[in-house]
Image 1: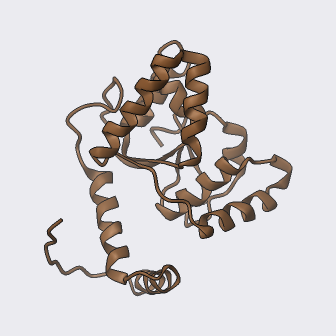
Image 2: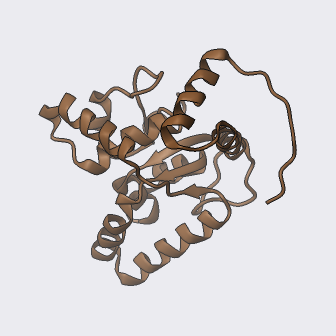
Length: 206
């Protein structure tokens, strides 16, 4: 992919964080900055067609998704289908942990049938190819952060997928989680600069 040179002003504290992260991950600072620019572009892009079936008129955001939220968007008979679809339409970028793939396929097969499950995976492939959905690699840092969350909120008995989603939300600097697991994500505090999660679809207009 060809690159175009540009100059930007940045907060010194942000640059210090980038410098430390680049050293920890063994990559160049410019690569992290390029990733950040791409995320900003995806979060503000106006899409010509919906993710699944509906149109959302509000501002686009980066949304980390969990399995029940995705399944509700896919299942037209689900009581929260419309609201979950609206939440997905609000996502300029939908972030999915790879831990969700097998779970989503299993649950979709069980609740919607094999053909619907196959169609769901094809939808994800199509939107990944267009940059609308990203399934990031889970690193040791993600797992370490997730384990810390599980220890801190031991009474909630969080599963690994939920805790990894907390880590991914920090990684992508977002407070938006597509989930029907309201009890857990109302109780857990984000790892980054936010005080609480926006639990979608409930908090879509906040």
